[in-house]
Image (cartoon, rainbow, N blue to C red):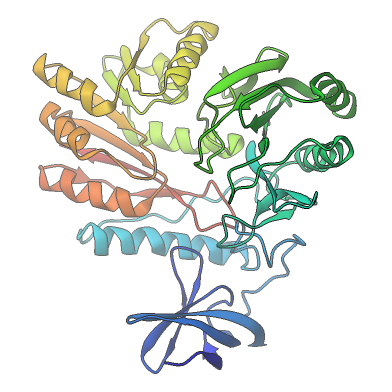
Length: 450
C-alpha cells in the first residue's frame, strides 16, 4: 500500500484512543475522527497488518462530536477524547472492559455494569507533570508532550484537567526561567538542568505543592524563585527540589530537598486526612476517589471480624478508610516513602488496628504462605502492569475467601482474572469507575469469591 490521501469511514475507537477505519480490508489507525465520520486522511505508515494515518479534514461529522474546549487539543497527547460527548466516552470505556474480559481473559458471561461517571469532567486532577525541553539557541518549552512524541514539548497556556492555579504556576515558572536564564534540559543530548515541574493540589483543602525536578546541583536563583512563587500563589503550602541525574525521561527524584514548607500537602477523603509527598502515589482524582473506594467497600462487604491484607497499599488510603469496619489490616508496599507516609497517616487519623510493611508484594506473600497466614479478604491495587505472576500465585495459595481487585488497566485485570477464576474463584459483577474523563483510561473494581 503506497502512502497518500484517501477518504476513510471511521468505524470504531481503539483502546489507545486512536480511531479505526479499513482500507481494502486492512485496518487503519488514525490520530483523529469519531465513529460514523467520513475523513480525509493521509497514510503515513504502512505495515504488514495495519496502516497508520493522519486526519487532515472531517468530511462528515458524527452526532457525538462536540467542540473541544482546550486550545491545545489538536497537538496534546492527553485528552484524546475531548471532542467526544461524555455519554459516549462512558459507552466506549465500558466496551473496553467488556472486550478485555472476553478476549484477553477468555471469560464468558461476566456482567459488566454501566460506568460510574466522574463527578467532575474538568479540573479534576490533583497532580500533573510538566516537562522542560530545549534544543539549544536559548529557546525552550515548558508544557506537555505533543501527541506521540517524547522529544517535542509545546508551551502550555492552560490545561482544563487541573486548576487554573496550576496553569498559572506553569506560566509563571516559564517566565521566571526565561528572565533568569536558568539552563533547561535537552532530552536528546541529556544535558542541562531544569527537567520537570510537578504541581499537586489537594481538592478538599486547597493546599498546593510545587516540585521542580532538575539534574544534580543547587537551584540557581533559589531564594528569588521561592519568594516569587509564594507571592504570586499564596495557596502554595510547600516547595520541593528533586534531583535526578538519570537519562530516563521520568519525573521522579533520586534526592529531594524541601525548599519551603513541610514537604507535603494534606488531602481529605471522607473523614480522614492524608499527607502526600512529592513522589508518593495518591489517586489523582480526589473527588472521584471517594466514589471508587465506596464502590470497593460495598463489593468487599467487610465484617467486623475480618482480617484484611492490603497489597500495593501506597500511602495507605484504602486500608485506613476501611479500618473502622474490620478487625485488622496489614498493608504492604515496596516504595519506602509511601510506607513512611502510610504509617504517618494512620497515626494522624488515630488508626490503631493497621500495620504497614515495606516489601515487594511477591516477597511478602512468599513469607506469608510459609507462615500459613490466614486472611478473610485480600485487596490488590497494582500498577498498570497488573499483578506480578509470583504475587498472583501466592495469593491463590493463601486462598482468601474474598479477593477485591482495583485496576487501572482492563487488559491486565482481564489477564489476572483468568488465572483467579481458573483457581476456583467466581467473578462477581464488574464495576468500571471513570476517574479520567476525556482520556482512554478507566478504573475497574471487582470482587472474586472462593
